[in-house]
Length: 408
Image (cartoon, rainbow, N blue to C red):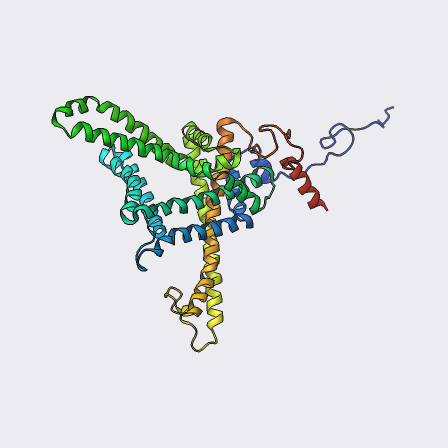
């Protein structure tokens, strides 16, 4: 006679303990947790932080006002430094990449020479047009870099630790490092300019006098070495530019360390880096297009609704591109342009937020450094130990307090 066992039974869902095992459906996050490229899809949402958009808005506004300072001593209808700089940067970027790609694909030295000529063209045109007034362009670019550094810091803290710092903290971080933010770009360009000036002076000295031309020809190999260094700096700076500001924001680095990291990461994983940039560009441009469409819709709806029952509405409500002629039209133009200005600030935020996420993901690939490891004041780099217990800046503590606040 057999007796039924009264002990615990095991089954396919009991785990051998007699208790049913709880399970949950597999979520998309489980499948993408170990992948790096999906992290880049967070860029549009991270860039939507009010602090980032605020800094972007006022950064673009101040840079534009600084660029227009040249109108104080030039005729009213003449170009300003800011207008010429923005136009030439747009034209120069497209011209540089077009000629560079054509030169690489066809091995055409003339095309490559034309590509690098675009880099010299912008400062030369500024100097010919504005002389010493072209220094305004440096101040305008410096404002944009400081604003970009603040946005990168906001994105780094949010992406790495889920901590949302205020715009005051982020801007203070960037202002304290304004020298590094400017010279990580100005440094390589200054070295290239020095090499150019030395080679030009040597060429004038050695090839202006007939009997010294043979010496110049014999020493031309040193000109090639100097040109090699200059071209390498230009190429690495152009390709590594998206990583320099984030290196300062994430590592608390100076300009030299930021340049070293950018110059090391790009050639270490060039294909992976290119794919990350392309994916971020696609996602970012889609988000910016949506933002511009929403801003245009808001403006159009307001203009149509306000002027619907007015027999003779202000001219700008019918033709918003018309230059304003009185105080009413100037005020209307200010408000009409506000939604698109905010969309522009969002685009600026997307740019630096995307570069920051690319930097952290690429650093994980190249160095194996975790994406949560960023510089925090009062914390020993690479550890959770604080150097100053009163600093109150431990990201782990900030995350814990934030989670506690959410639970409350």
